[in-house]
Image (cartoon, rainbow, N blue to C red; front, top):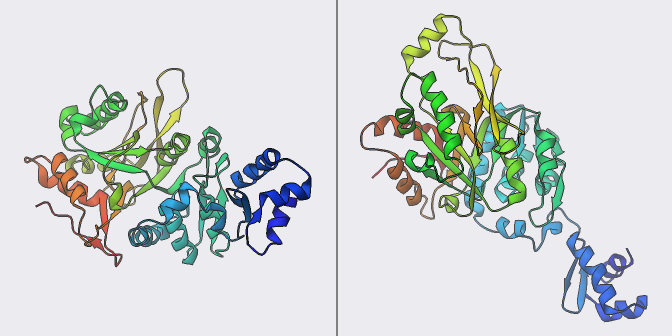
Amino acid sequence: MEIIEATARNGGRPVRTRDLCERFGIKQNLLAHDINALAALNLVDRGHGWVAARIADQQAPFHGTEFSTRQSRGHEAKRAIACYIAGQLRQASDVVLDAGSTALAIAEQLARDEHPLDVYTSNVAALLRLGGAPAVTCRLIGGDYNPQQAATVGSDAAAAIEGRTFSAGVITPRSLMLIPPGIALADQLPSGAAARAALSQVAKAQEMETAEAGERSLFLSLYSAENAQRELKAVMIKNSIRLFIAADHSKLFAAGEPFFTIIIPPPPAPARRAEDVQHGATLRRARLAPVRSRGPVRVRRILNQEPSGSDTGMPRVWSDIDADASVDVRDPASAVLVTSTDENDEVPTELLRQLMAVVPGEGSEALMELARSSIVVVKRNGEPATIELP
């Protein structure tokens, strides 16, 4: 506390560590230990031979961190994505928001909105921004605090929300990629066995072969460089009824380790849907939740039943799936990738390249329609762009 007070009284100017050593009557190495501890808590700035007070505002605690570095990039793209997602969240009652600079941009948009909303987040910067928003109730997800990521992380954070369902969730992966079915289902990938098991259930429900269901589905692989955040992000995905994946165009080229695969199968055939409604079936929203076990992770399909409200609903009954990685099967309307246009305000070339790799010549029209319903490219003015393959 005396070190903090000494730097604060110096009017923001650096204080020489040699002067502090003389004042406290201690050696340089002992003072360095205390200064390093204060710097790790983001309470002071330090350099070679000096220490200075950190300005006490909402963003200063993150100065010099990895989070602050990411925050300085791609302002326009993040703002466009944030405006679009914030508009979609007006239909939600509660939302779970992960860490990252794009998530902070979304929080800033929510803070300006008058729509009442409960926000659960691991993002400390978002918590500070939403704390003064009159219409928003913000709750920090407990866990270990990581200063570099400005977020709570770890298994405790994941356990804090494991039993809760959110009407919407926002995930900001480090990078992502649309991958062809053959690669997504490959034996050498950790998610291959889980994806095949989940896809077989889709094929059974829609009365088709597993290979055919794979060819008609979109596979989205999410990548993350932060091991400490992966478990929490996985629970966020599985426990969100509607999922928004926010990633600007620079993240469309995968880098890092894949930690989650999202499968978006084609909607059920109208004839099948009408048949089920005729028998008085109700629409069921399905999601995946992890069940702890030794060895491979066991993934269980949980049903959340709601009255159908129209004749377009199809019941889906899923059995338990034994899997070795995190995989989620999402209805097209319940999972949306929101990305940005490139520097020329055009649909990113990398996105078109990936779509061309996953959309086959035969049946491409239906798969492209699925892609258009699941992928939104936002222009700088906030309007969605039309996705057309060359």
